[in-house]
Image 1 (cartoon, rainbow, N blue to C red):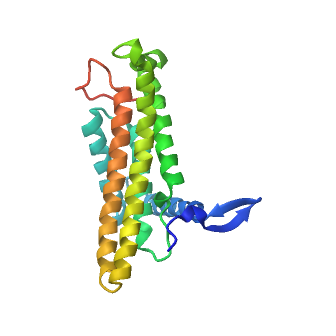
Image 2 (cartoon, rainbow, N blue to C red):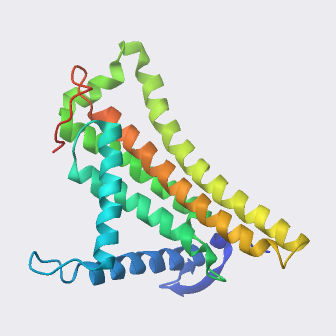
Image 3 (cartoon, one colour):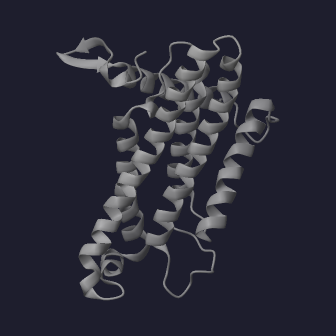
Length: 231
């Protein structure tokens, strides 16, 4: 059983191999974009919300509430970033129930890219909120001797994010393969249900950790308990 979608070359574009991870990532992106466009095509005050729009509003409000609870501040820009991460990871894991679909999150290249996006977002949000000098001053806290350790800490966060997500998705695939070989008629339904739950949990954990890292970079030293707007 092939468990690494990165090795599955489907076709080539300008002599660049395109594997299952890339194609399935496009599928997830197209699905999210299509559903969003269909749900918001009549987004006007004079049009009553339908079931899909109500469901989307509940999801957005839930993500926004979690961000405010963790960061103690309001931020639409943080909502857009963290919400996109959550939806992409969750939908990718959700599509595991489709026969023959290898979720992009089962590839280390995808999880590394997601972790890298968080690493890049942390200084961007930090500089936007605290200014260039104020953000880089955090690397010298509590003293200048901590500079190399704080830099290592930032990179270790990204590595842990990537490995955690990749390891959990891959371990689920391996366990599923073993159980299917033992009892192919009973375990498929159970593993599908467990996979959906695991996918939701992993998307939630990744989004929460991204929020925590960004919030720590944007928090004011003397106003940690005050809710305010992030630019």
